[in-house]
Amino acid sequence: MLNRAIMALAASVTALTAAPAAYAADLLPPIVQPEPLPVPPSFGGWYLRGDIGITNQGVDDLHNAVLDSAASWEYVNDPSFDSGGLVNVGVGYQFNSWARVDLTGQYRGKTSFHAFDRYDTNGNGYLPTDTDNGTNQYTAMKSEWLFLANAYFDLGTWNGISPYVGAGIGASRNTIHGITDINDRTGGGGYGGEHSEWNLAWALHAGVAYQMTQNLAIDLGYSYVSLGDASSGDIVDFNGNSTIYNPAEFEDLYSHDIKLGMRYTFGGPSMPAMPSYGEPAYGAPVAAAY
Image 1 (cartoon, one colour):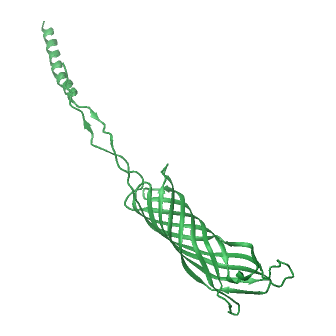
Image 2 (cartoon, helix red, strand yellow; image 1 turned 180 degrees about the vertical axis):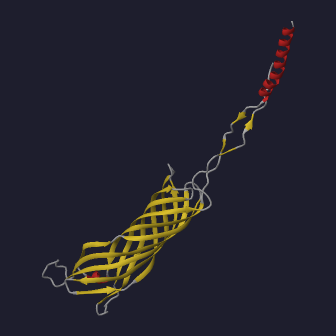
Image 3 (cartoon, helix red, strand yellow; image 1 turned 90 degrees about the horizontal axis):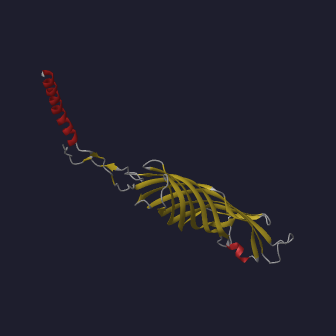
């Protein structure tokens, strides 16, 4: 009888101590994981850029007033320039994920110019025995300072790569660093001194940029540039004489440029920021039912 009483008392004590623990566990609220809070994309604002590149230049025509009186005239070797180097710097502003503008200044290094033509003064053809025929072998050097205001449109970003297109307008200071004209047929020739002039310039751009870091992008681009006209000083003979004012006139200069550069953006990334999370939320307590 005594043993039964002791066992009943132990069972009662166990039930009384376990019930509050179970009840307390039922009262603990579940933890709810919050959803990421939406974060608007962060755009960098002001940026600096620097580029180096190669120019591949051309000219539509080379004119000299002396040849206006010739009965016929033609190029044997068309006017052409050697490739040259360029250095470009600028400052710009990115408005959003697809639009940005910048102002650039560019020095386009000296490039060599070559052309060879022949002319006939009396119109009887280019006969070997005609003494009225002549030739002009031109050599010259040219360089430019180019200043442009540019606008670009980024076409999207995939794995950090952003293709873009753009256009620019500005001015170019074109300099002819002297020109030499040798007439092999007549044994004559002449030279013109250095001359510089400002011209309206414009450009079309296309390329791709790769976002290396949140602030630094690598830019590989192509530009078609229209540089306007240029001319040498007055061409005189080797005695310094000239019967008319006849500079060599380079009409409609243009260039196909390839550039590699960097853009450094201040004040923040040009890529979307990482999402942030709110404070953990707790559900309402659940009461135990017995």
